[in-house]
Image 1: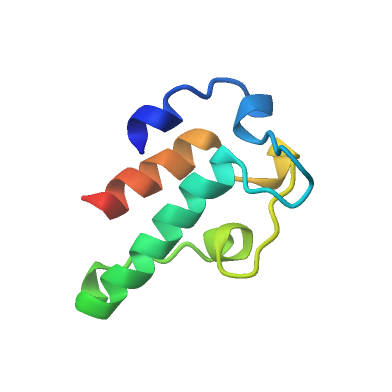
Image 2: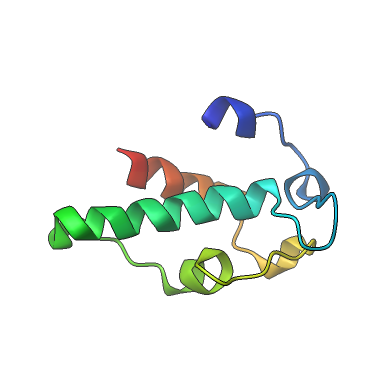
Length: 86
C-alpha cells in the first residue's frame, strides 16, 4: 500500500477520480486508516485513536470529492494510516 501511495505527489494526483463516483488515492488512504482504527477497537478499546473528521470524510457512506481542500493534509492522513497499521 505504501509503495503504491508513494507515486502520488500533487494534490491533483491525490484527489484524481476517473469518474465522479470513483474513490481516489487520498480517500483510499484515509478510509484504510479509519477502517483499521475500527478493527483495532474490536481488539483493544484503549488503543483506539478516534479522528471524527476522518469518519466524516473517509467512513462508510462518505462520498469522495476531487477538491483537495475538502480533506486533511496528505501528511496527516498518511501519518494516521501508518500509526493505525503499527
